[in-house]
Image 1 (cartoon, one colour):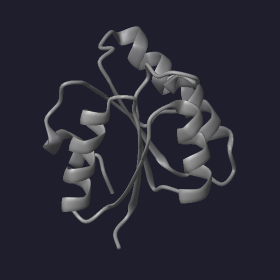
Image 2: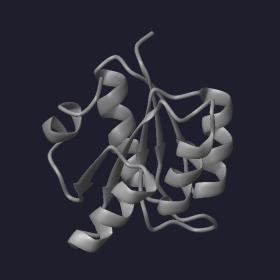
Image 3: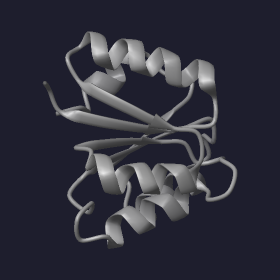
Image 4: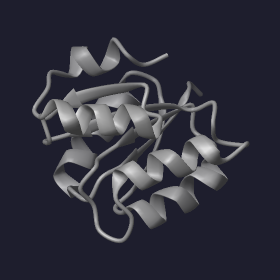
Length: 117
């Protein structure tokens, strides 16, 4: 099996699109529909990459990113924020929280795959 990707996003249709694309490209894929569930899934799944939305219920993406970076078992995962928030201040806040990359929705799948290991 390929590298592991965890997608954390509350949009079920978007998750399904990501899953089809990632599994089709040979990645192992898991998902979570909110930040709290995503953090729990990350601890058991130990992903290589986290695809992270910012605007989610329970725990927002900035906090999820910061918690991943603070966790000694998860901190090496690449965090790619996928958000509809396109302002520079949103991108800067995500990068300050520890994100490696930031893509604004909608984006083309080749742009995402260019960032994946």
